[in-house]
Structure formats: structure tokens, C-alpha cells
Length: 113
Length: 113
Image (cartoon, rainbow over all chains, first blue to last red; front, side, top):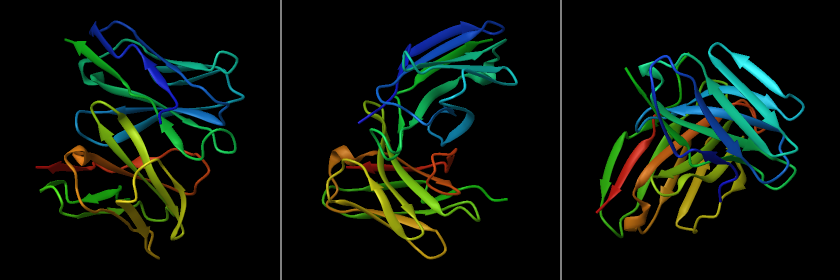
């Protein structure tokens, strides 16, 4: 069963705009990660945020984590057409509810040139 | 450094047959996880191996099995294929099972006719 749930399921924006995706989860976690997947390919790791961190940046990516609300958000600033992909959050809850990395269903982002 | 290699890339089988998929992790990685990805269910965890031992198993029937060899390469086997087994099967490797970032292969697209 899935742990995280991304919202929205699909997002369409213009190049240059910011894109925000949200992830909610159910159990206590050790860390939360975001991955990107281009159509029909493997996932690529973007960023990892630990349970004791509240915000993390990597280039045009900004991730926040609110453990009290069991939610995270991924912000992509100044989006480009090449950012078009599916984005997944994954939670590591070992020692708690699960013993593996659990992925959400993903947000499909389309960036129009 | 070579990435995670999955073979074959595409596979077409008929119901009732069995199939074996292969995954070669990044050199030095000892943990290999397998996921099934379908449009309706997202990524579902199958199993995780570490140093030739199965550490965790997802909620899949016994028709799905796997193993890991001493060189960390892993195989998964699906017997008595069903139409619903059609999916992208993704393998991911990491240094250990500590919930750190996963490195994914490009996947094996299995179609069951």
C-alpha cells in the first residue's frame, strides 16, 4: 500500500512560472524524498529531507516538511519545458509503520514553452 | 561509474508463462529493491534484498519471488503470469537499507497477453 499521496495529480503551467506539489503521509517518518520520472523511465532522486529538518534547497528546488501535519511540499521555481515529468514523494518509515520506502502516486507536471 | 542496469528493457509474454528479470546494481551497492509500477496503482514495493538476504517483502502473491547473488546482482521471477502483471518493473539500489536515496534502473516493461 502507498504511504504518500501527492496533490495535485496533474499540474500544467507556463514556462517561467513556479510549480508547487504537495505530499501527505500517514505514519511517522525518518526522512522524505522527492523523485522525478520522465515518461516510462526510471526515477531520479532530487532531494532528501530528514524528519528534523523543516526546509531544504537544491538549485531551483525548495522542499519543506511539516511533521506535525505529516506533509511536504516541493517547489520548482522558474520552471522550464525540460521540467515536464512526474514527481513522486517517498517516505522512509523504518522502525515505524513500514519497513521500506513507500511512494505516492505522483504528480504529473507539464510545463508549456 | 555505471548506473543500475536492468535487462531486458521490454518483454512480451503470454498468460501462464513465467518470466525472470535481472538487475545489476551500482558497483559497491549492497541493497536492491524491486517495485512494480502501473498507471492505476503507482509504485508498489515488491521486495528488498541486502547481502543475499531478503529484508522486506511487499503485499504480492507468492508468484512473485526474487533473489540476490553474492555480487549483489538481483533477479526477480514471476510465475504463472496474469494479465494484471503487465507493468513497468523497476529495480533500485543503495549502499544499505538505511533509507537513503535510491538509484533506479530504467525498468523492464512487461506486457502479458
